[in-house]
Image (cartoon, rainbow, N blue to C red; front, top):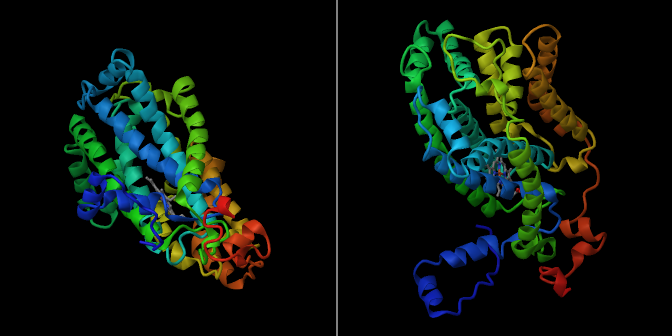
Length: 427
Ligand code: HEM
């Protein structure tokens, strides 16, 4: 882990006894109190903390929901209604969990975009970034399985559409894709058997995510945080201790985000979901328009933009797998797009493309919608595979500040004696 002088002191006899045997308080103090944090972090750096909150909140509310939920085709839909109407505060747990899933994705998209903009994936943070991509994939799998649980029409048909994607393998090895799909289903169609195994995995995966998040934060604390300048911490004047500075900022950022979260949870809990999911799953009636939750729409648009089923599936999975290679696709000398006059614009074009794909994914797969989805899909891949490597080489970055401290305090700010402003109030 990044080294710094510890201010950890223990005065009680028990504290000393523990410190000599299992110094967990010393470790926590070193990593979450003393830890040197760049002094220029903006509110986008509060999203890691916000995500940690949502991971915990989803687990707690999910455990309570599971106490009353019935993972059977005959009982699932009614058990969710029972939770909403009869169980004490069941409506609250359900709303927090369902809206929480949406907020979790909103936060993760901001977190990923922050990383892309400020080049947080660049050396030495490649593993930190790749662990993030793994978390993102696990989150997607967890949310996908979770959405099947209320056993509404969209649950059933969403699972049918997405699991059926594996049948596209039939065009390479005849019969293999179908066998995989039937193995996933546990039968010849999506049924109560599928629901039961999805429930089991939906309960398990958040704990796997907790494990990978542990590695993610470990990796972060080895290399230290990036910051809006993209420069590393060089002297003590570039950093402040994590507590109280970053901790208070995180608490404020989380409080603001909570206002949005709780507004939805209390006043519009169903707004982010699809009304068809309040119709019980019916294998005999296919909804005319099957759509996933909003946070999957950009990927769904990529899937449908390609006329060939197998290639559509390949494109959809590649659009995420591609992120793993971003640290090497970006050839720029500087990290932060703040100092990259050309790349900056391409970044915003990427954001617009992803938002546009999200909109197009919610529309029927026909006519002008498909045409535009193809345009934005092409841009998405071009951005990472062509623009990122080429612009990185051709562009001349604008002048960087000499240090993080200089970017905050102006010229000369970075030349203060080491340690002088490690705690700015002592200056
Ligand atoms: C459950 C989901 C996640 C949790 C709980 C989480 C947690 C955190 C925390 C606490 C931090 C430090 C604070 C901050 O920089 O905001 C962080 C940093 C970071 N995360 Fe995540 N993260 C998650 C998902 C992701 C994903 C999906 C990616 C990318 C694909 C990612 C990439 C990064 C990077 C690159 C940093 C370093 C940022 C910097 O120092 O500039 N994370 N994460």
